[in-house]
Image 1 (tube, rainbow, N blue to C red):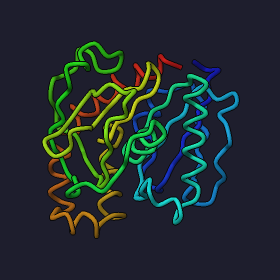
Image 2: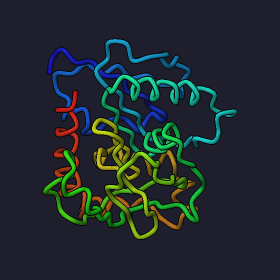
Image 3: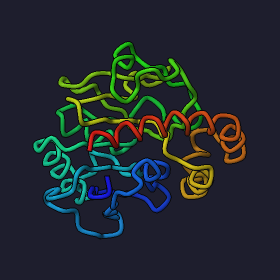
Image 4: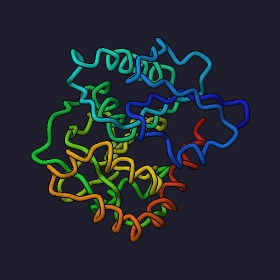
Length: 232
């Protein structure tokens, strides 16, 4: 795996790859901080795969964040060349959009720790097979996507029917977060404090729940991300 390099699209300082990077030891991660003005490549070139992280932007805010158009083109390039793609939160919404699915505001924001249930198809999926049928995951999103026509549903939650999907055998979208450390979650509660408060949450409760649920979530996440790394 030492020969592999990957492009990471980052949309907020606190939303780094987290434990995804641990699963990609030996790989070179080229992080593009598009939110900070760093230009998005037109194509993957020699990069082996693409990781698209979360952030406060919305897919439909291309006028406000024109770099999202460049990111959509890069995702399209990765899919066209059958390169592995992993989209988390905003990244999953961008992937869904490239695949022709509408991305819209949800009925309410889903922020905090909520149960994710794996769909039947997850049992035979390369990343999700033999994992717990249901587990607590961290959520921090206001937008939701329809399931792309070409995609297979892998997970849902009580509030959001489409939480994870696979397109083909190389592209995955995860609306929920399995990649974060406790430190990252703490940073999220500060960076997006107003959003958390508006959703009726508070930092201490979120962190107390992290102390209960994060260890198992990270174990599940490590399995999923290590399996994704084998697609490279």
